[in-house]
Amino acid sequence: MKPWRAGALVFGSSAAVLMLEILAGRLMAPYVGVSLETFTGIIGTVLAGIAIGAAVGGSLADRRDPRRLIGPSLVLGGALSWASLPVLRLLGPEVGTGPLAIVVLTAAAFLAPATVLSAVAPMVAKVKLSSLDETGSVVGGLSAAGTWGALVGTFVTGFVLVSALPSRVVVLIIGGVLVAVGAVVSWRAGVRRTGPALGVFLVATGLGAAALPTPCDTETPYVCVRIESDPERENARYLVLDRTIHAHVDLDDPTELELRYVRLFGALTDARPDGPLDVLHVGGGGFQFPGYVARTRPGSEQVVLEIDPDLPGIAEKHLGFVERDDIDVRIGDARLGLPELDDSSFDLVLGDAFSSTSVPWHLTTVEVLDEIARVLRPGGQYVMNVIDGGGNGFARAQLATLSARFAHVAAIVPAEGIPDDESVNQILIAAGSPLSLPDIDPDDGVVLTGAELHAFIADAMVLTDDHAPVDQLLFR
Image (cartoon, rainbow, N blue to C red; front, top):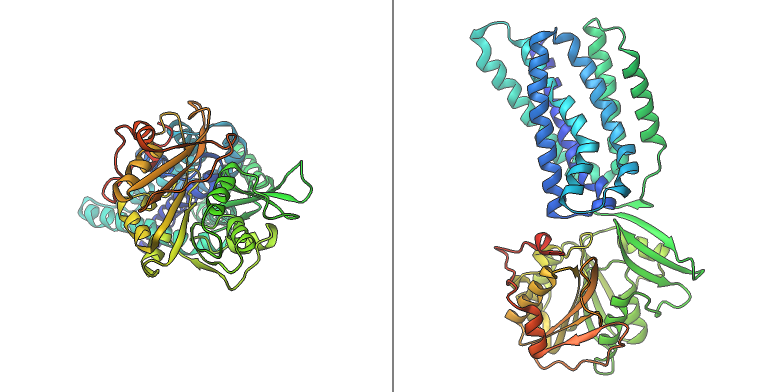
């Protein structure tokens, strides 16, 4: 085998493994969400596949002719890549959430292709090792080729393919290339046919991957988007991002606020002094609330910091959002966009940025609160939506963090208390001056302030850029 062919095989198989690893986070998000725990489970499981594949591939190469194993391994790796799609579609809705569910789902969908493709490198090494005198250069060269393949696969997938194509299409392409290359390599090695089981599996996985529907109506660079009809209102729509409802819009009356947390946003906004408001939205979602402010407070100037470039267009097409000069939508990470805003430029800052059900950790810390305090005018308020339950570890930590930077803090929680078995929206309010809060509908919650709030926070940690374990605090 020529050196360039050996290097290309190891480069390509390693690239495919890392491409599948990057795509796993996108493909699994509708079922288990996006969090540090998601990526920890994916990385750990794929690493296990790499280790198992290297060991098994080396053992097989010592017992059989590796030239006749490489091609079929690539074909099987491609088929298993295709199989990951129907496995996720069928198993994903059933596994539940949490670390164990993440590992189980990752293993079911991606452990096998990672293992099989990682077996290619030791098989190629066996072919290339003709004497002990060249062991170092052969092993080192192939190791370098595999590492370069992993790097290129990671960068091309994360920076190019995820934005350019739906993840499902990328998986179909990866599997197709592996099957095609494997067939050529098999033919050159004298393997003219494979067992009937592999042929049946190849056809079944290809058809399953192509035929099973995706859970997304649209896949953006960041989320799986679904627009669902409200069965009780003909012209009402839900926006579902990954597995969480982010908006409910009645197209006949966009000022109708159906979701509890949005009603609370509305109550707190309506309680501000009469007249136009300057409002900063950290996170756009369905862009319902910028439209609500524009309709109920004519003349208001608003800035929306939204990381996903596709969501404004989706909201305009399906949810009644209308682009207008007094709503400045800025695409990019809110943490990077905040320093570009002027001091004392907003009456109200609304925090509604989520990655699945978790607020991105870098938007929770004292350091980002310093920026929010800077852009608020005297008398301005920061209103933040969080989702938590059980021990409420994150919500309490976020309140502790708000208390470390703002003199006046309050929370609106369900009147019946925080449930032990599910997560709920909680609205946190912070300001540098005394809060003037409206009467809250008892169905929407109760307000905690003063000693009651301090007892609620208890000994919760303050979140900093150096230590903000948001995903681990959720529902603890």
